[in-house]
Amino acid sequence: MTSQAPPAAPPRPTIGRVVRDQRKAVYLALGLVVASLWVLSQADGWTTALCAAGGVLLGLANHLGTELWLGKVISSGDELTRHRIMASTFVRLMILAVVAVGVAVAFWPSGIALLLGLAIFRLIALVMTAIPLVKELKDA
Image (tube, rainbow, N blue to C red; front, side):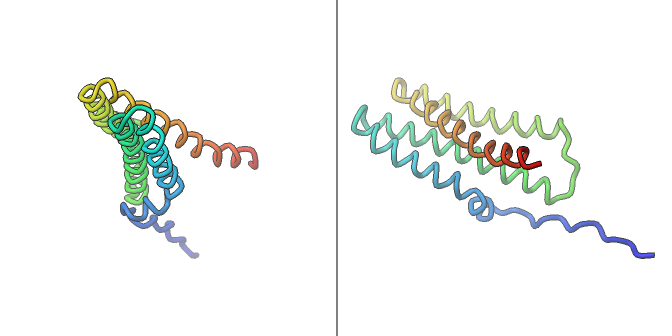
């Protein structure tokens, strides 16, 4: 009688590994930062351009932070409960919202571009995440 060993847990994620794994999102964010600096600095000034670029970078930080947290939970072998997911998401999004709204208010009216940059990055990142999932569901 042979007993099978449980599958080994994936290696503990690091920030470098998460950035490498999410390089498409990083490249997207860098492209959006360059585009916002180029277009908005000419159209409305540097404050608006920097706020939009900051919004994209906040969105990237949220995306990478989410991936890092999920990787740590999966590699730890702990059970992922609905309460744990909700608590982590709530804390992360509250910090993001306080920073984004604070900067938007501090640099009003140009600061609203930060919220726009954040929203655009989140929308594109969501589409980038959904496309592989839809392809996988279609193949199944």
